[in-house]
Image (cartoon, rainbow, N blue to C red; front, side, top):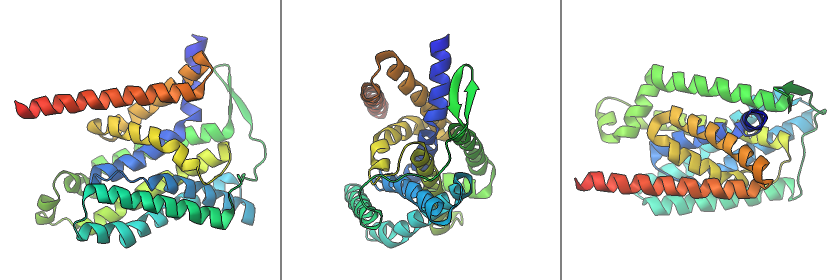
Length: 290
């Protein structure tokens, strides 16, 4: 029972940013079908924006969290308008779009290194308070991350399921041609999704950064797990992504505690995700034949 409680508490609080980042990536993927590699840099940008606001203006972490997410959302929107939208209008293929996103990822990473340098940077924050939760010590930042993910996930779910813009997003993701005929403006809806995804990724990056350190590879180190969570959970909608993200967070900690190797835990989960995607693909192929 102690092992289960430790896995739950540590997993949910320590890996909460994973769920938040996966939500943002899943929204983009569902709408565009694009595996946007540059989303990893959106996460990194959120960490750098938060650190810069914190260290330059002396603002505490709670104050810089939302501005960091908003700035990352602006960058995400600009990259869509400047790069991805023109490419789509020229009927660039899916593989070429992934290559473009990979090139953008490299460009942004080196731009960050040019501005901030390669060495790791740190938030200037006082040591967080430690709160005992079911016998496990948890920092206030981790609890804030968990609470933020819970609130943002609920708000996004309500936004997508209960508002007219959410209905337009779902319609556009299902059938763009039919959505246009129905009077939906694809550009406005797509811009909104890119902005929301950027804000979610940027806030996740700020949480990652304050919990450890800020470096140009911060988002890239998390990207593979984020991608897998989004791909596995997307068939069940936003709720599925959240559920898979939570299970992944707890499983990572459980295996790390059991085997004392966090890297092995990540590798095992990635293999499991690949098997799930392979089996799902085979079933879809068989269904199509029938």
